[in-house]
Figure 1 (spheres, rainbow, N blue to C red):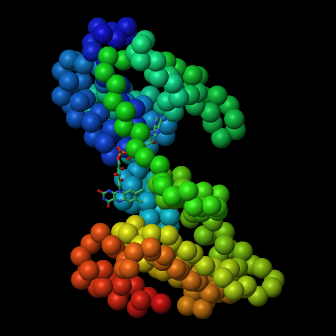
Figure 2: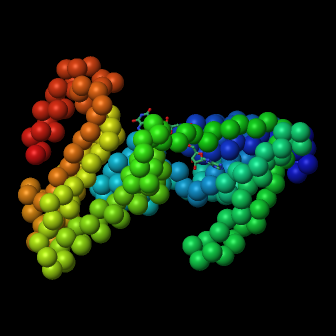
Figure 3: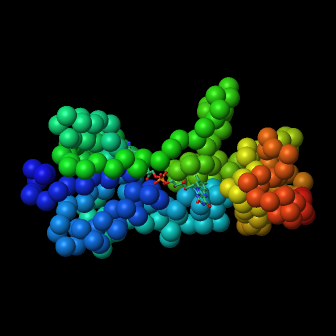
Length: 245
Ligand SMILES: Cc1cc2nc3c(=O)[nH]c(=O)nc-3n(C[C@H](O)[C@H](O)[C@H](O)COP(=O)(O)OP(=O)(O)OC[C@H]3O[C@@H](n4cnc5c(N)ncnc54)[C@H](O)[C@@H]3O)c2cc1C
């Protein structure tokens, strides 16, 4: 039993697709009836549904309108939310430790904390596999978190602004985006980028001709795009994508 009260304490680390759903369901069942104390820990304040990340990267979706505040979800569904990155686990003492929360000016907002649990669920997801390819980690942006999606979008936006305002003519390849992986996310990102670069250019970036200056390359190791889908589907999407060139 937890020291904080006499209820069985379930801690879930990671509020992604799995952890958030679990915390919500346990909160609605055990938490609401006060049969257990449910705590969700995540290192971010909000949850974004990952299949939407390509839209954030391309700039066609405003993340503020689609993200879910953990603290609000916790309030509505009878669990507690604790903000911080888990960096310690003591299985003998049944404790997890989370890092302090530091703001953008480097000030500590929440100190390091330790929580006792009776049941621990680890739902921290995965990291992008770069297959150990030299330079991939340093020189590419993975698309696995909201932060990475927003970083890519800032790069894209800045590249367009640079191209618009520089004194010299655009260099070949200056506005070239290479997307590695032609699964659903890569394909959708390519199509979204085609549209949003045109929309951005239409907002007064008159030095940029998207048809001439913006190049989007989709790179796939397999012999077709969308390798997880039936060949007929890959072919149909391939035809549609090529029309965007
Ligand atoms: C771009 C993209 C598109 C996708 N599209 C689809 C799709 O169309 N259909 C589909 O079925 N699947 C899709 N997926 C896969 C799907 O999103 C994952 O399978 C799913 O999110 C895995 O859920 P999870 O709960 O295991 O981890 P995640 O959803 O990754 O959640 C992990 C959570 O743990 C938190 N965390 C990590 N480390 C710590 C720590 N040390 N301390 C505290 N918190 C921590 C993170 O902040 C995050 O909130 C997509 C994934 C991506 C990246």
